[in-house]
Length: 278
Image 1 (cartoon, rainbow, N blue to C red):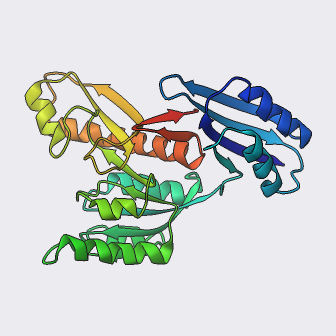
Image 2 (image 1 turned 90 degrees about the horizontal axis):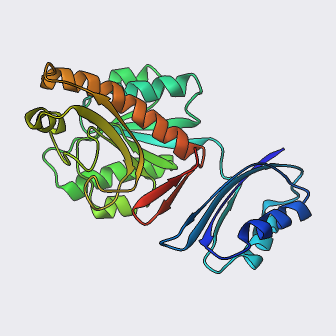
């Protein structure tokens, strides 16, 4: 039987030896081990895959906790298939790619619901037998709008919330409801062209590269820990429309890649950065 172990803790000499010795005592054979030390923050990170018959996760967790430095974060056998909610506005490309992966069981997650602040994507979503909730942001306060979304999310209890071209800025109160569990796809190679209309800004600047960034959402707009980024080359023949068309393809690729990494528990957050064990 395979087991996955994630550890984030203050760094000190002998951690690898300590961890592997404890796993050996439990007759667990390590088949994959990745580790990294953030020298600046003095933090140690490791992701371990091992095989063997583990009597209980709790027993191993307690033994690791007893021997590792104080303040260690230890996860053993996290839920393999995550549950996600997707927030959308009108653009369909990222949602469509996500729902197709959901349908063919290649997402490593199940889409429990889609929430849209317009109803444009209702019919498309329901073709996949996934509930769509139309919650308008118009003619109501931001607090009311977000409260209505949170009510739906509370009912479905997703592990992660995916902003698939959801064109509304979320409040700190909403973000605090899902700390380090909201993933956004931004149509720019951050930190360039933060905010709205990045392709027009890129066109006006005459850039030779455009890109997309998937990141965790924080209270700082488009400045959360980056999970994945990609770029493609453009030239003087690309107008705004051509940039947008090309950009949509890279947005899909970046979001799907980011979700894969997160859902496979390969991403650690440290400050405003990520450690990604690909």
